[in-house]
Amino acid sequence: MCNACIPMPTQEKNVDEFADQLIGMINQGALSLMVSIGHRTGLFDALAELPPSTLEEVAAHTGLNTRYVKEWLGAMVSGGVLQYDPKEQHYRLPPSHAALLTRRSSPDNMAVFAQYIGLLGQVEDRIIDCFHEGGGLGYEHFPRFHEVMEDDSGQTVLAALDEHILPLISDLIPALERGIRVLDIGCGRGRALLHLAERFPNSEFVGYELSDEAITYARGQGMKNGLSNIRFIPRNLTGFSETAETAVFDLVTAFDAIHDQATPQSVLDGIYQTLKTGGTFLMQDIRASTYLENNLDHPIAPLLYTISTMHCMTVSLASNGAGLGTMWGEELALEMLKKAGFSHVEIHQLEHDIQNNFYIMQKS
Image (cartoon, rainbow, N blue to C red; front, side, top):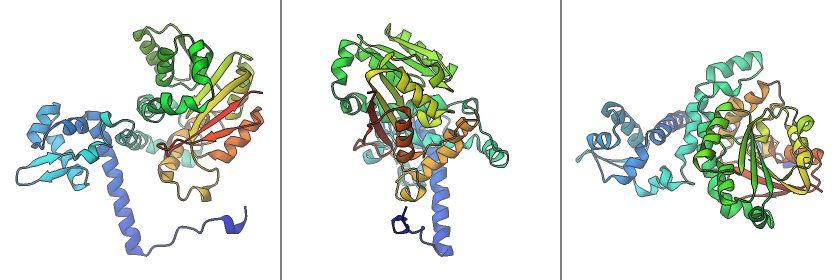
């Protein structure tokens, strides 16, 4: 890469300017925890429905402890999330803020992503140990991971699946209506796959997932919905190329799953192997560059590098894996896909989604 193509380093700030930046950063980090609490407790949903209300009215409506609600409201008002009328002692969630903070506002509910801050904070001590000793933390150290990922998937995948993602692949919807075999790699709690199985009863769907907890949950949802065309199989995909069945599936999907794998190249090799000739692989993964200097203007780069350090990279390293991390980037992804056998790869981006690329390729 030529020197002229490399962006200049971030401009140095004087002490006062950098102090202001750090204070803002710490305040916003604290607010992220409180936004997560507001989402998980239903406080934002309640405030969106209520007229301007007192502390007691908010607590009574939600059934939450008044003392904790008071402190939470203080953080939200001082952080500019809620409005407060000191004369009436009324709290209000403006509609323009509710449009980004309530379950009703999905897929635009930013409070979903605030959950990552608290989730990752739980493993800070163990991650510091990894800085000194190497290695990584397995999924068992992240007790709410699949719950949060289900929330995340509901916003980035499920909400866009019918209208935006499936139409990226020519003639896919008619094929699903006629009946094809579909595999989802790293399906988690199976939210996307369950939706597809319900919409396309003539097709057969299989989900592979390492987590027994996620598999149990997904199977329960499938039974609850009366779906007979879907199976969830607990499977460790390490060395997948050596165990994958040959030419079995018409479509393979991987939603935000490849970069977490211990052996991502083997998984991609196995996907190519298990596809039928002419079959399609759809991979959703993080929109970023492999090179740091190309990510300096990325709107959520600090968040993604943090998630990489404290989850995606470390769960792979825990299995003595490649540790690609969240920000493995387009360049490396294309290189690995080509090595797996995919000679032509299309990269699509959705206007409403700043986080993801959608890679589409066929087995020739």
